[in-house]
Length: 187
Image (cartoon, rainbow, N blue to C red; front, side):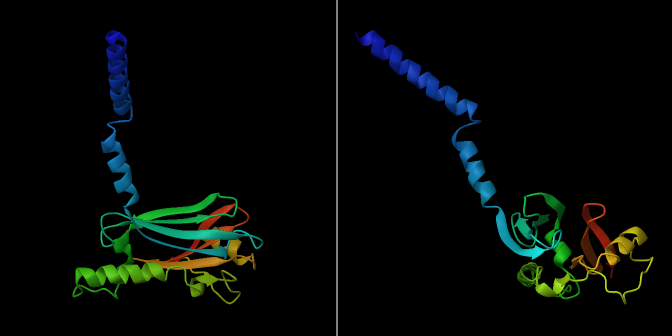
């Protein structure tokens, strides 16, 4: 009578042991998943018309890493129907510019980066029309095809942002090419 209980106990022990191994180590996998989710340091986002006048797109930034100072920025624009139309990654130090010179402390740099991210989607960074009729094309800073396409669409919404010390970018959604284009890139 004891033999069936012993066999049952051995079966349960072996089965539990196999389940832990097939999950990639049991508790270790769970710990790794918990620590990965803790790596999100900062998020910022806004809904704004961009690719469509009828529906708002989601502009979002997610900062991951071990610290704000040494993190990775993931900047995306997602349409109302969950299509990713813009996807860019760069390090958080791209938010350091002349406002955070060499004399600032690490904490001041982190605060500066955080402020830049918090203000990234301010309304003044959205431009409508993306290119005004009075704006002039400059071959040093623009691609002619993108410039002409965006300028010809009075309903195009532009978004401007600065990374680094002198990398000012202006992007807009091209209805002709059905994608986000960089139409101006300058200091």
